[in-house]
Image 1 (tube, rainbow, N blue to C red):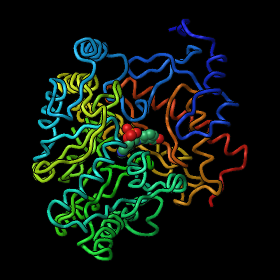
Image 2 (image 1 turned 90 degrees about the horizontal axis):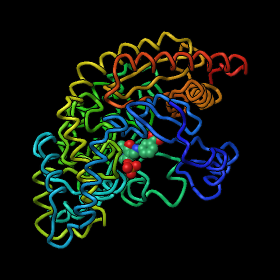
Image 3 (image 1 turned 120 degrees about the horizontal axis):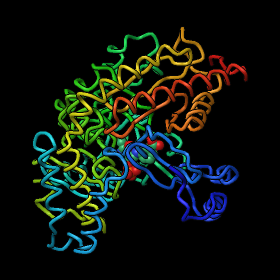
Image 4 (image 1 turned 180 degrees about the vertical axis):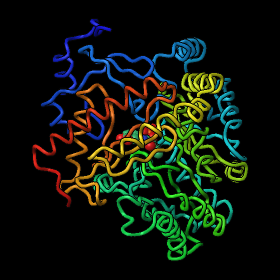
Length: 463
Ligand code: PXG
């Protein structure tokens, strides 16, 4: 397929982009020198750029395009909804059909008694809702001192002041006065990087028990909730040892701490079940959702809460909401996305076809001289790049190998992200075995080229 022609030449687009558009999480001055890659269209799992390159998107955009690109049904539903009712709010004793249908569908899909949805425009907004909601929940129950939310270092929960505080990204906390008060961070269950000589399961247990330690140190009467991603995504696809989550659940139950599962990445099929908490065997009181809820076709997120939380919050007025909470167009698009996920059996496809095939091919990458470990859950995988396969020691110059590898992926028409020296994937759930073969062969080529470059630059040294 050729590049579409109804836009300005690439260089002009890049110049205008550099002049006026501030990119998220980007050193904009540096990008302005290089010029951003202009993505013009996409179909299935393939992006096309303004130069006509066809790139396999192994990140599903930003972990969100679960059903793949180019589904006309979602465009049709959006157009129809815009004509019928483009906007109305649900603040003042009004409601509308798309939000009703979507809330009911989410309640049907969600496990246990997670039967109620508070909508937001994004995952960040939903986590901000969660902060206010869990604190208000305890206040309503006569325990206003329970306001501390425990989270983890290297977690990602969003970029707003509240959600960025919940997250444990040191680079984010260093800018703009984060974190807000009463957010407490414990260590993450990242055995590869932090497990030392310990057995992974023993380490997982130890890291889970940090939650109990924190509760006892802070005082049970001060702790409102624990929030975590079932599998950390932006932190580098960190798959916790099997011992981790059962112990976390035990501790939350013992101290009656609300458990918030941030399902923004794990939700809607990514781990091989509808929700990551099902894969990990946990029973959250609240789930944060976004991304795969609409497969990224419209901005929408929300908090899915239990009967108990909804009853306590609903007993009085919760002074909270967003203009776009339950936006009718976004809700209609999300509903159509869920219809496709369900009717086309996409979660089954992940569990029975795509994930087992990808797992086999992905784990085989561990035989590459640059790869220390390859981990995968469902359709989210990571590999650790190492200077020397005999140990887990990191590179002396952290992040360079990952950066080079990502560049080599792009040069080979593959989008694979790096987090430091971890390479990560999260492809559309509809990916076929034949497409997985292409993904893996491009990844191998990129790894080979990265290895050669590291050798040439004498960078294969442990730190
Ligand atoms: N929770 C989790 C677990 C996420 O991954 C959010 C909340 C925030 O959602 P919104 O819709 O406000 O972005 C996210 C978002 C990356 C990257 O570089 C990851 C996210 C967003 C942007 C970049 O991996 N995840």
